[in-house]
Image (cartoon, rainbow, N blue to C red; front, side):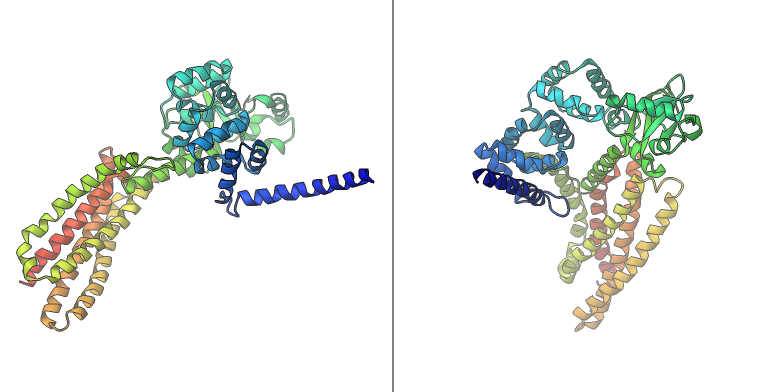
Length: 482
C-alpha cells in the first residue's frame, strides 16, 4: 500500500513540476517580454538567504539576455553574489548583453580563469568588446589563460580602431572556393560544424587569393542540387572595408537590405563578416547618442553617479547661460519701452518660446536627414527653400491666432489692442522664419566644419530664437506703439 502511495505522490509531483515551471516563466516576464518588477525581489531574496536551489530555479526561467537585464536592477553586491551561479557559456552570453558601466563593474569580480572560459564560448567580436573593458593587468591574465587561436583573434580585433568595421566584425566566416559544388560545400559544413560561426547566413565564395567573388546564401544551398557549382548560384557581395566607420556600415546595410556582408583588408582579402544582429545594436547605439546629443546630455546609465551626471551636463548649462545673457541684451537696449508698456513683458516670452519650438522642429528634421544621408549638397538648397516657405506660412498662421487673442484681451483699448496685435504678430513671423532658417543652416554649417550637428546645434538655435524673439518684439514696438 505504501509503495502505491509513493508512486501516486511521484506522479503528482511530476505533474506539478511543469505547471510550476510555466508559472515561474510567466512571473519572470510580462507579455512585452520585459522583466516583471515583482521578479527582481525574488532573486534578491534568494541571494540574501543563500538559497542556491531557489536561485537556480529562478534563473532557469530566463534567457541570457533577460539575466543581463536583471543584473541592471540588482545592487552591485547582489550582482557579485549572482556570478558564481552562471556557467561559462551563460556568463559569456550575459556579458555580451550588459550595459558598459555594469559590465565593467561585473568584470572586476569574475576570476581570470572563469572569464577566459567564458570568452572561449563567445564570438570573437563580442569577446573583444569584453576584453577591451578589462584593466591592463587583468587583460593580460585572461588572454594568457586562453588558447592561442582565440587569443590571437581577440588581439587582432583589438588592433583596429574603435567603432570601425574591424571592431564590429566577427572573424569566424564560412568560405569556399568557387570550383566547389553545392554537395562539397554542404559536406564541408557538416564536417567542420564545431568550427562554424554560431550565426551565419552566407557562404562566401573566394578566389585563390582569398578575395570574395560572391556569396551563396544558405537558403540557396539547401534547395539546390548537389552537383551544381557554387559559381552558378552565388550572388554579388557588398564588401565592407575593415577601417570603415560603423555608422557608415549601418547605412550600407540599411540601404541595400543586407543580412550579412564580408569584411576585407585593404588588399581585398576576406578577414571577417558582419551580420545584421550587430547592425541592429549599432543603429540603436547611434540613435541613442543622437537623441541625447540633441539635449546636450550623455547617457546616464542605471549605475551612473550623481557627480558624473552633474559633470556631463554642467558645461552645456553654463554655455546656455552665456548665450541667454547675450540674447536678453536686446531687452536692455529697449528697457525704456518695456517700462512704458508692461504688456510687452508679458508677450515677449511667448514669442521667444514659440520660435524655440519651431527651431527644434526644423532642427530635428535636419539632423535626421543628415544622419540618414537624405540631405547633401545636391538637395540642400531645395530643402532650405522648403523650410523657409514653411516657416513663413506657419509664422503667418500663428501670428493671426496670436493677434486675435491679443485683440480680445485688450479690447477695451481698441486702437492700442490692434497695434499691439500687429507688433506681436510681426515678431512671431520674424522669429519663426529665423527658427526655420537657423534650423537648417546651423546643422549644415556644423557638419561642414567637422562638428557633430546633433551635439551643439540646439544651443545655437535657442540663442537665435530667444534673441530674435526679444529683439523683434521690442524693435517693432518702438516703431508702432511708441
